[in-house]
Length: 124
Length: 124
DNA sequence: CAGCATCCTCCAGGATACTG
DNA sequence: CAGTATCCTGGAGGATGCTG
Image (cartoon, rainbow over all chains, first blue to last red; front, side, top):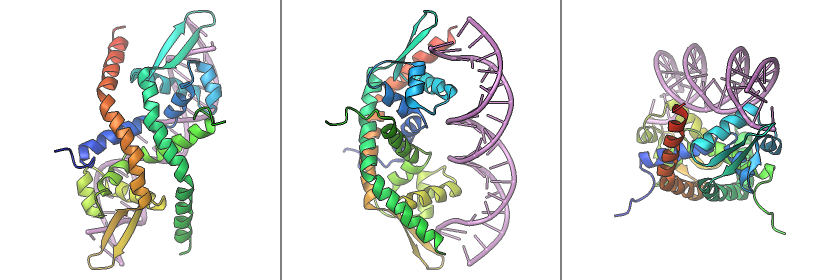
């Protein structure tokens, strides 16, 4: 008696939750950048490009809170802080990359659908 | 010479885009509900529960525009409108479900990490 | 029934300035 | 260098009322 599908409302809400967690503007960018190894704050900032310092801090704190990233402070002068993916953080990348692959493969179809829809909407 | 990883900024932005597209509050709920077959507007509304009529409309229009859903109007009185997943819409579910599975498996670890983080933050 | 129009609230996220 | 503190804006999303 396996559950028929994933369509029960509660299940879908759990899905929605994680997608929203990971679907904000910067989270996957940050995680992606960290997948090769630890990085420092401003190193991340430069590598990502376009992220405000406030949002980088916020995003990193969130990732740290959820156990995706560790923060290591070296109390030198000037201070140095390394961010590194945890095991959980690395695992997260697999399903995210699966979605990314799908996205890459279907970007064209989606854009075509959009163009068609917009053209149809414009002609009346 | 395969691309080393998916960490190029542009790639990650594409990922981020699709995740934001699908990571809004209602999209996956609607898609999930439609995966068994076509549904009418208010049928969806009731099944999902908690969604405002405005957001259901908005979400469905977005899904239609991107080619994930078709809208069929039966000009009866009163009118009847069926929404149905396209092939593309069905395909989308696979990677989304993969992420959902991951989320289900790791919800406990995440919640534990959060509890730990919050406890540590509270004690000073 | 399946919506559009309108108004309102809240917060993600940016800009800027300051600090240990 | 790696942040915190403030202020501000746009847009996601809800509530309500009206209509073909």
